[in-house]
Length: 480
Ligand SMILES: Cc1cc2nc3c(=O)[nH]c(=O)nc-3n(C[C@H](O)[C@H](O)[C@H](O)COP(=O)(O)OP(=O)(O)OC[C@H]3O[C@@H](n4cnc5c(N)ncnc54)[C@H](O)[C@@H]3O)c2cc1C
Ligand SMILES: NC(=O)c1ccc[n+]([C@@H]2O[C@H](COP(=O)([O-])OP(=O)(O)OC[C@H]3O[C@@H](n4cnc5c(N)ncnc54)[C@H](O)[C@@H]3O)[C@@H](O)[C@H]2O)c1
Image (cartoon, rainbow, N blue to C red; front, side, top):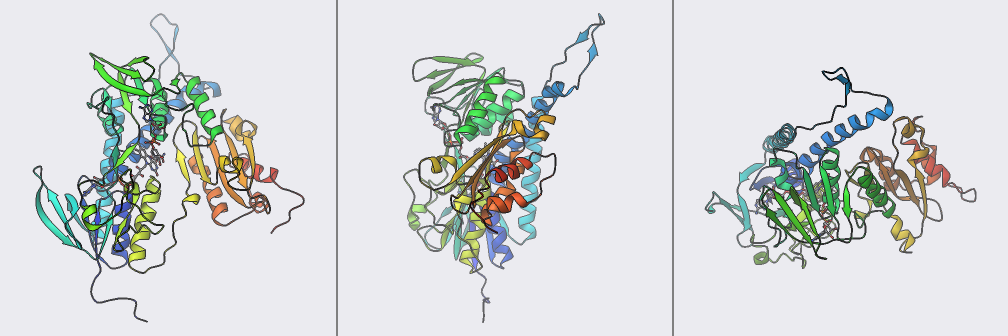
């Protein structure tokens, strides 16, 4: 059977973030003629402003936390003052050095990714792409936006990502009223950072800046932080936030943020004012889908401007696919990559598995972290899905006690009949590293008994997962 053609399939990719990068690589791997158009830098927002810089900042926050908490484990930092008396050293973070480090890391990773594309044979074009009628994409370059290129395609992949949503009444100035993309230009630690929005982005930065030694006020429009996440997990995080000195203003909507000299004043909808040195606006993102001619080629958008896609990342136009944050899917770098790869495999006739969002593992990099996968407790409690839930606090785990891990738990969710594992939550330091066995269990449809038979190291945090599985054993159910 002939499965290849003499004429090369032409793929054009708009955007070089995880969605675009992965689709371009997949196209090159399958022998297509691939052009990737990127206006800023390969790696996209994920590498240059979002995932990589934020998680690098959080690595420093974790180091500062470890130093601060080491006293509990008997580690002392000691110095004598001139009078011979012991001094109490402070943990001080050099923000300039930290920001230089994270920008360097991000820049290097962007370069590595660009080189990987070029090595694979992808043509990388710097500029802003837009649909120029059916079957062709134009590229604007230069500050005046003059057109200089036109690329014809058989398949297009739109992976243009999203940008921070801002409020009309809290216009970012890049100095004191900031989006998360502007945080990395700070040269001095904010003395009081007000974070507006307690979604994942707001919670991660509020957690990190508290650990870095900044006074933080978190303005949360809901009754608890991290709405949409496991309620027990959000409770733990809020408790830790407050214990570490953060002020959490719940049911508080920010109406405006303005500068007054060296201060920012955030006015809440009930008229209260919060004064700080800086404010971070973390109220979600807007897809970059405007002014790129999507309407001219008939690509359907949702009311929020996201591109409608199916489970193989195909849009309403058969030869146009879309991946990542510009789609109405799930805004995660991991999902963007899989969508990008799936799109190109589908277009070129390779093996494709429709993406099942239910099984996506995700992690919130607060301290402690929250990792989740599969069905969640609220769906069981609401009766959307039958299931059993078992929660095991980490305070019972021997390794956690040794390491002075005070907060967190493992929550396992299994089907009612055979005890097949269908979901889980882990709240713990490095939960992101502990969730994989649960992802595998869910993909492989393992039962709690099968999972419990796997050996966990003693002592280890991961033994709480096998312990939870063991606790869910039901003598009336046998399965192998
Ligand atoms: C603070 C923060 C932290 C995050 N942390 C995590 C995390 O830890 N883990 C995780 O999985 N996800 C995380 N995310 C989500 C993750 O960043 C996104 O899901 C991911 O960036 C989506 O990738 P993408 O390919 O869709 O787009 P992006 O990474 O946004 O890249 C899109 C690229 O397209 C370019 N572009 C736009 N328009 C055009 C055009 N017309 N022509 C050419 N190029 C164009 C842009 O310049 C950009 O470079 C985080 C998000 C935020 C905000
Ligand atoms: N670790 C990670 O993987 C990670 C990190 C960051 C973001 N993300 C992705 O990005 C997605 C979006 O997260 P996000 O936090 O940027 O946006 P979001 O939309 O989830 O959260 C924004 C929050 O701001 C609140 N808000 C809006 N206007 C407000 C106002 N005026 N005052 C106070 N609060 C207000 C909203 O109610 C909401 O809770 C996440 O769901 C996730 O997929 C992932």
